[in-house]
Image 1 (cartoon, helix red, strand yellow):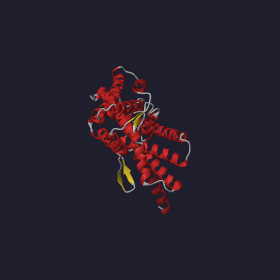
Image 2 (cartoon, one colour):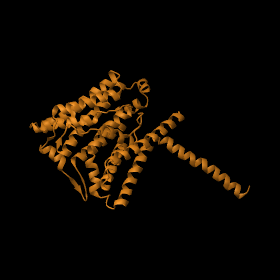
Image 3 (cartoon, helix red, strand yellow):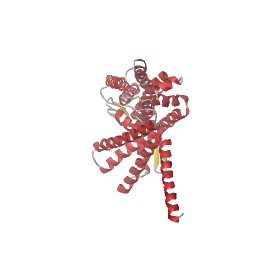
Image 4 (cartoon, one colour):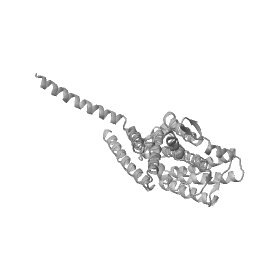
Length: 343
């Protein structure tokens, strides 16, 4: 046997091995590939912006990224639970507006914060519970049920007030104006609330029986029933969690702006769905990560900041996010198709 033959056989043996390793890796970690892609895009955006502008990766800009998008991050946590069950919640923007203006009106009337904040959260929970009951017990499609929640929340916000209501409560002012600094970096209490929401959401999704049931329902509702899992309670609870996050986002946004406004959050539900999908959650359900949704929020916020730095029209933000959304949906379809072939 010649040396050339030996080399050729070795290369031939190595090539299938490498392909096999790549195939094994993509099969085993297919569910996290979109999240890895989102992280790659985020790093590319940050590095590209630093090279182009020269002063982008500063502590001030990175801190503002969390401050400006804290409410979006809270909403994304609740939406992740819903989409993993193959549902959708179009009401989150309206719930945020309603709870925000309702809380602002209570603050303006002199009601103490120990009453106002629970009322804001429970208002969001009530709308989420209504949507969950419609979806589970009246067999209404999630799109239609949450669309009703959207109109209900927006209508209630207009009933409370047609004008902006300024809030001067000391607790809310502390939430909105306090900055904890470390060098050039800072974080506001609203940012802390957003990060705690992400951490709690991730722990619930991955380390509790309820979280595992959420994934099981999204993977196959019929199989989840056959396994004896409580599908009905789980499907209602994910909308309750989304409503709770809507109420919390209303508190965060009211503290951030210092006022409540009934037209806040128009179109925000689409932004939330976009960041959750960009973060790697499959619209078909069964796969997704709260931490991935947080990455999606940072991608969205970074694109907005770059557009502001360039002085371009904000419409470019939606164009770029729309293009990324299409890209990630194609990636998701490829993952689902590969999973179907491997069964």
